[in-house]
Length: 216
Image (cartoon, rainbow, N blue to C red; front, side, top):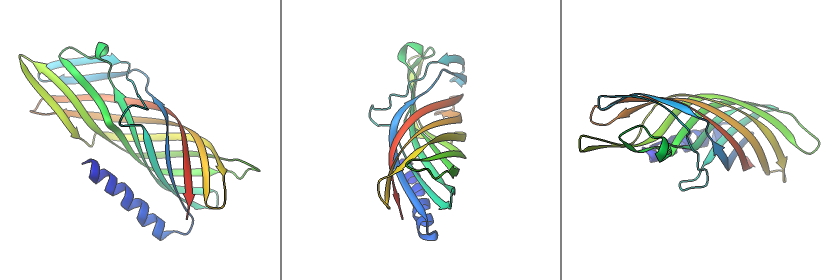
């Protein structure tokens, strides 16, 4: 499933690169965090309702990163973006019977974006807004009555929203570097294996990104 997600993103990028004249592809990483969020639903007959202080662990393997493509028409742009964010539930905050509760490979967000930029003397400010889907890798281990159930798979979990803004600094006619703040909100319905039920969690991420862009 991870390979399929990557192939879909790359295919869309390559299609757009060939279809338009003013294109930009970027790669970035940075520091990503999450505020507390409530996990609720059912797990193997047990009601779950717990507010958890999720952790991002941006620099732990696999690291936090993203890819994006933008087609610019003067100062208005449209494109697609993939973000490999992460969400860990600390052991001390997991509900009873959980020994693992993670979206770490990752909390994958794919959005169609719209951009606005402004030409500056040195830096070019920009803003972005996007809508898309959340495709997390669900990694949950739950033990009840001596039986361990392990959910370990990619799932199409729900919708996602992206907002952000930053500045870009041209190095030359082809390359630029950028820094940005990004906010994402994703609605995640997580299905447990063996008809174990569904867990719901709406996750917010806040990230400071640093990246490099290449124009074509």
